[in-house]
View 1 (cartoon, rainbow, N blue to C red):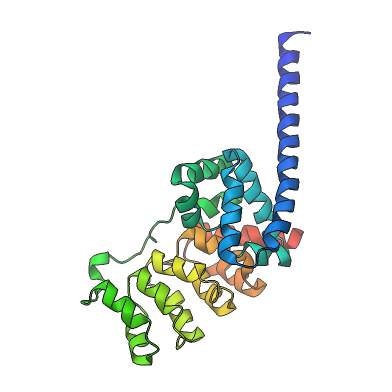
View 2 (view 1 turned 180 degrees about the vertical axis):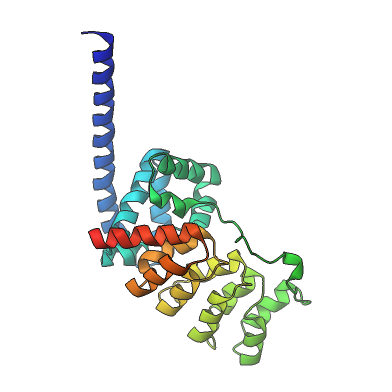
Amino acid sequence: MDGATRLRLARGLQAFQLAARRLRIGHETDRLLTVLGGIADRELRFYRFAEHLRDRASIEAGWVIVRLWERVAVGDGRVKEICLGLLDVQRLRDTLGPTHVQAVRDAMAAEGEAGAALLDPGNRRPDAEDDDTVPRPKEPVGHRISLARRPVRRLLERLLFDPDARVTRIILGNPRLTEADVVALAASRRASAEVLEVIARDSRWITQYPVRLALANNPSAPAHLIVSLLPYLLRQDLRAVASSSPRQDIRAQAQALLVRQLEG
């Protein structure tokens, strides 16, 4: 047996072992979905998922995310419900560490996986306004947080577009807040990425379709946040994003998703 033949055999064996390893991870991910589906609390569900990723090498963690994303992308209703808010890159970075998440993202990108966009670091939109042009409230943030807790409509209206995400987090729990208020905030082009991500993480409001649609169409939202919401849009709304989003990367993701849904 010459050297070239041995090299081909070695590469073939390596490819077979990699495929078998990926198949095993796929089966483990399907079992993980069963476990996650039994956890009603979204916070506990997220941390169980993060724990699963922490114990795996970067390439294997990437395969887990790809497996979930594939099932979400083809419209698996049960998986979409389980995974809503699960692939939150900032929370994963906070929980697993930015280095680990970046390594997972790089492993996915190296294999040409479209789902790698889910783990892209948040960045400002190209036309984002300079922070210096955004009016800053005069009251200390602690005082504004205190006011945000009060069920007083006029205070709610004054604080709804507060630039501090900590104020937004409190406002989202205010009993006087309406869906129309949240949609207006989710659609605001002046809302910061942090504020929009707070909305996306809120288990009460992210389940409302108009809120998801407003976030997905907001050019202020980080790309990874929009990409994570695309599978949750109705077909006609997804087509609209694919054809008219001002961001080429988002149009490409929406178009690819439409193709996947048609094939599925």
